[in-house]
Image (cartoon, rainbow, N blue to C red; front, side, top):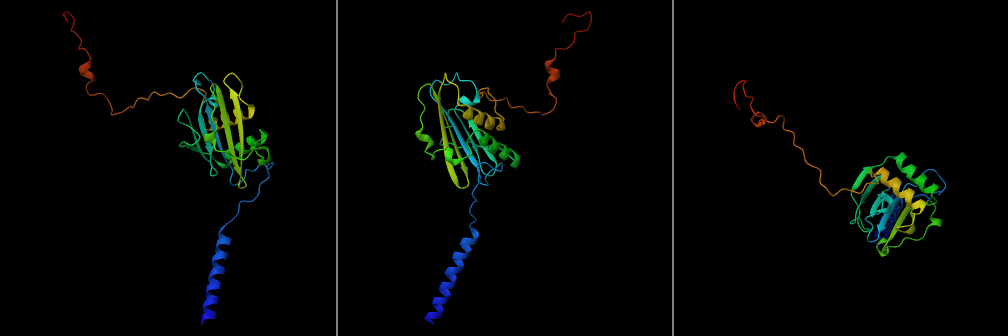
Amino acid sequence: MRRSTFCVGALVALLVVWSIAGCSSPVPAFDARSPDAPTDFSIDVSVIAGRNAAGQTGVHRRTGRFILMADGGLHSDVGKSMQPNVRPAQTRQLDTAQVEAVWRLCQSLGLADPADGQPPINDMLLRPGDGEIVTVATLTGGEERWQFIWRNGFKESTAPAAEQLVRELAALSWMTDEPPSSAMAPIRYEFGPDPYERYRTAPETPAGEKP
């Protein structure tokens, strides 16, 4: 009886191990030179502008966040509240061709190979100095994560790779170089013709009579 119980227990354990191994499908390794993006490709970009950055022109020089998820969801927003620990709401859903285009842009900018980046650090630890802009890009692919960090002063040009990457993600998010407006758009209610319009129009005075 003990032997049969032991055999049943061992069989159950083997089935559990087999089911776990069968359900887990590791992400295949990727070739950084391949035009096809890794199946788990994602990118997280933060632009952190120091104090007195109000006079900076260009969406790539304003505090903002751009996150492209592996499923194509693009989350983005700009403004002082968009710190590295804040994930903006989803702006739109990119299709496969658009995600592949972002991947190929990363390749052309020299950002697609983990060997060219550095191990990611906590973005919240990156504080820009007064008059400085920090741009951070963290990429994921083939179950690897790597990061690039650029710094430039207000009077200096943004690194070309950082500028092109941010501007492309901003364009996909329908953003422009115009600063976001804090004014609320008026709400319009269309209920048909104004029933009081005739009372607002001055009546015509018959000829020969004084008004």
